[in-house]
Length: 176
Image (cartoon, rainbow, N blue to C red):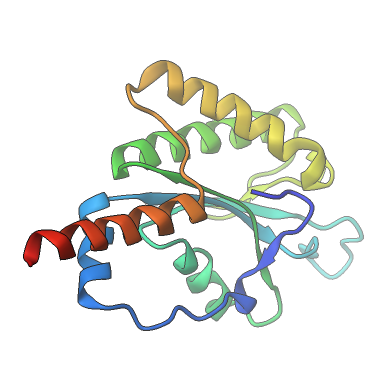
């Protein structure tokens, strides 16, 4: 999770074809990913709009590489950027973290008197550059999750990959 280097969704490295054991190991582990995404730059809301809007949204996926993919395919003129990707142990934990992040974004949006955008998008133009507000928002949401859910932990991509490899190795030894 590095705030200074957002990842463009359309530059996500392709995942190598996984063995059936790796797919099963990932399913057994049950890790899910909560991703905060935005457009790469503010977008104009109409022809005379000099200020624009910065659409921000939160997604939950079983594979972090899938985050933002639907938006990116639907919007050829706006590039989606992953601001932060957080791994959690279960779908329940992911849903709770997403709810906390959505609440934090909506609350700050209304306090800044910004207008809401359509559907799942929140306008973060009044919050400033993401590096000034993202980590505070994320830390607040994580603290709320830790207080309300037992066993709440964060999983990095490297830890996830190591856990999958360990699970495959453990199952491989059992099968012999």
